[in-house]
Structure formats: structure tokens, C-alpha cells
Length: 364
Image (cartoon, rainbow, N blue to C red):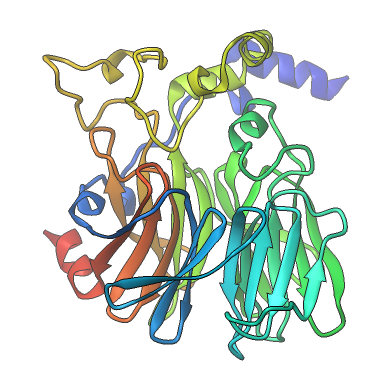
């Protein structure tokens, strides 16, 4: 009863979980347009994830696994279902998640038969990462919705995300965490596992005993995949940004239920990986074009963001594509040679920025 009274008081006063304020892009997250300056390496139909295979880049593009060495992409193989996550193993093995419900491990990228297959109750596997002991870390976004139906999971206030440890040697699966607000991205950090908890706008550390602590919280975005950065630290992508309008809708249960039932998903008051393609899209004040121009500071329905994190998880700087840009829906970022390579899923692009220029660009 006390909790109920507290919730009612918060709702009446607009505080606690009932607040609709959104943290600002400030400090290390100060907006810029560096992602708009990135070179387009490759245009894809449905790019999803990246991995590095020695001197080549592996790209998950729908059903296809593409290898890019230099400027010549080559299709390695196709699968019967879309690739939802990708990872290279230290010994040269390949791990692929298919349709979010199955993970296959191969000895190398051209092997025809997997050495391990994981299914069980996997439902929305959206990221894979190798651990130092030879196991795989897998984030399973939701037990209710598929890996591509994340917007519905957000609108339904989903909190069924999980993190698994997959062991290719013993063919066993161990659950490390459950009840997460859409787990989307993980990386090994010593004995801990860093995990993006998208709907709670934070990065958490999960210890071997299962305890959790918040490493980076109150983000103005929904974080996604993580990868190690050269010299220590990590790259954290954010596939969509938060807005006050969406925060308000998330707290209006009756409106959300009607919207989900009566309106096509493309036109929900919900964030998207790209925007500005239809007059039917919901408008929100400053988001309306003024004299035919979209202002970069307008509330974004879609956004592009990559954050460079220090070893302790604190943000050092960030790369943006703002409301008036097009390189939105960034879902993956890896270091490849002297470049940072990223997937902007909104426009279907694989992007490249020289690592040497990033610090200089941020200072400028």
C-alpha cells in the first residue's frame, strides 16, 4: 500500500518515475555533426552488426554475411534467417545469431557445419561478445517480442531482457541476468560483464555472482552495442534518442494501448531508426520544418550517436548525427585498422571515420 501511495504521489507531482524530463546532451555528449562527415564504405539493404576478421571487416546484412577487404565486398554465405548478431572468437571462430532465436558457432567464417548450436528459449538475441575464457556473452532483448520488434517492446514497457553465457566447448547455457529493460549489447570487462539496458537508459556491470551496479546512468539516449576501444575503454552506440513526447506517452497507459491497437506501428509516437519519410509521422513542435528547414536542435524522432567511454565507463566524447542529419540508428561500431567503422541502420550505411581525427575534431 505504501508503494501505491508513493506512486500516486509521484504521478500527481510529476516526480520520480513519473517525470517526463530528459537529460540534456551536454559535457562529453555535447552535440556535433561528426557522423555526418563520415565516409560511406558500403550501402546495404539491412545492415545489422559488424566484426573484424584479421585484415577484413565482416558485415551482417540481412541474410548475407559480407566480407570487406579494401574496397571489394564479397558475399561469404547466406543464411535462411536474418543475422541478428555477429562476433569473431579469439581463435578465429565465428558466432552468428539467426533471427534472434538461435546462435551458431563455426570454426572459421567459411566452415559449412557449426560446431555448436544454441537454441533453448532464446528469443531476441541482438548482440554477441567473446569472453576471455572462450565463452560467448549473448544479450537477449526480450522474451516477449522478436529482435526486430523493439519499438513494441518499448511501448509495452518491456522488462524481460536477459544475458546469457554460452559455452561452445560444453554446449551449455548459463543465464547471468534477467528482468532487464531490453538488454542490447555486452562486452567483457575483467570478471564483470558490461551490459546496455536500453529502456532504463543505462550501462550496468554484472558481477560473476550476479550482482549489478550502474556504471553510466541517466543517458539521454537508448544505448545499444558495446565493443572494446584501443588503448582501453569502449565504444558505446545509441540507436535512438529520448524525447519528452515519448517519455510522456510511456506514462499514459490508456493512450499507449489505443495507439498500439489502432495505429500502424510506423506512425506511433515512438522513436524510429530513421524519420522524415512521410507526412503521417507524428510531429512535435520544434520538429516541424521552419521555412523548409529542419533545425538540428529539433526534438529528434531518430538520431545517430556513438560514445567513446573510458575504462571506468565514463564518457570521453561522442559522435553525433542530429535531427537534421541522416546517419541515424547507429547500432554497431568497431575499430578496424586506423578507422572507426559504424553501421547507421536508418539509411542502410556502413560508415568510416579515421580514429586519428576524432580527438582533433572534438576539440575543434
